[in-house]
Length: 99
Image 1 (cartoon, helix red, strand yellow):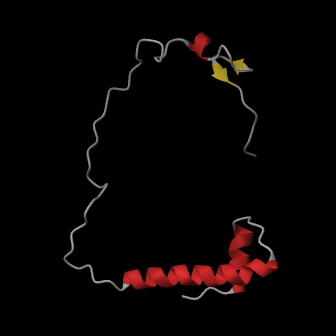
Image 2 (cartoon, rainbow, N blue to C red; image 1 turned 30 degrees about the horizontal axis):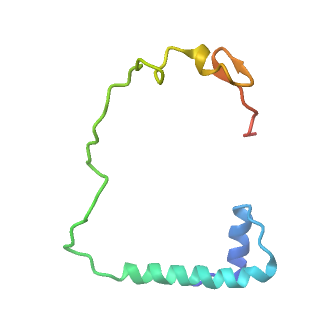
């Protein structure tokens, strides 16, 4: 699959990435090369080859979700927010970053 300069321009616009015009053609060539490698990998016959690792059906050890005692545990909201510049009801108050 070949990617042209117009496609790179459109993707850069959608991703809100400012790319100068002289950089679009080299990016198109790089991306086309990457997709070429992916197409080569799709041609490899993997029938009958078992996966080496998988994250499916793996049971990880779980601990109980409960408050821990000691200096790193909960139950000390006043101490936790003591050095925060601004708090409200034992919560940190931070500037809004998402509109």
